Image (tube, rainbow, N blue to C red; front, top):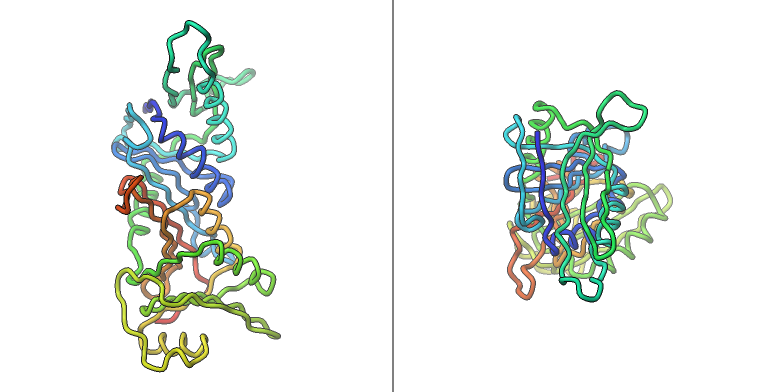
Length: 329
C-alpha cells in the first residue's frame, strides 16, 4: 500500500482556505479517501444515518479530481488502488499550515526563486517507546531558510470490506433530489436559522416545485417560520397555482405537498447549523432539495470555473441531513 503526491498551489490553497475549515466545523474527524482518479474528504459516511433520537448527523462529501489538488499523484493498494483512513481535521489543517509557512519563505539574496513543491505521503513509523509501527500522513517541504516534516497520525487504513462500504455509501449519496432550489442569499438564511434555533430543536423544511423553500419551527406555545419564494429551480418544476400568493406560507406548503408538487421533512436544527458551516468553503451556488420519499435533506454546493459561469466538474461538495420523520410526498 503506497501513496505519494505533490500538491499544486491552487490545490493546497483550496484545502487550507476553504475545505478544511469547513470540514472541521462539521465534525472533528473525517475520512480521507484516495482513488486512482479522485481525492476525497468524507464525514460520517460510515456512521449510522438514523442512530439515536436525532439521527447520526449530517453526511458531508468533498470530492476533487486528482489533477486539481496534485501535479504528481501515485496511489497503489490491493484494494483496487484505493486507500482510505480517518484523521482529525484540526491536526491535518495544522500540519498543512505549518508546511505552507515554510514553503512561503522568501529566498535569500542570490538564491534561485521558487521553493520545492509540498509533498505528502503515507508512511509507517516506530514511535519512541513503541514496538509497533504507526501510520502517518507526512508532509514535507523546504523553504529558503528551513525544511519541515510534519507527521499527522491517522487510523489504520480501512480494510477491503470497509472501503466497499464507503464506496457503496458514496454511490448511494450521488442520487440528487428531483427538485433543487437555489438559495441566493446565504447570509439571510444563516441569520434566519440563528433566530429559529432559539425557538426549538426541530425544524420543518419544505421544497416546492414552484421554487419555494419553507423553514418552520413549532412548539406547544408558538410556531415561527419563514420562506424564500421564486427561487431558481433545477429538475422537476411546476407553475404556482393562481391566487397562491394570497394564502399563508403554511397553507401554500400544505397544498403543494397534497398535490405532489412539494416535499416536506423534519430535521434536527443542530444538523442544519452544521451544514451551514460548509459555506466556509465559499461555494458559488447553493441548492436545497429533498430526496424522493423524504429520505433526507440534501444541500449541494456548486463551484464555477474561475472567470466563468460554467460549473467546475473537478469539485463536488454536498451534505445530506438525516430526517426525523418519514417525510411527506
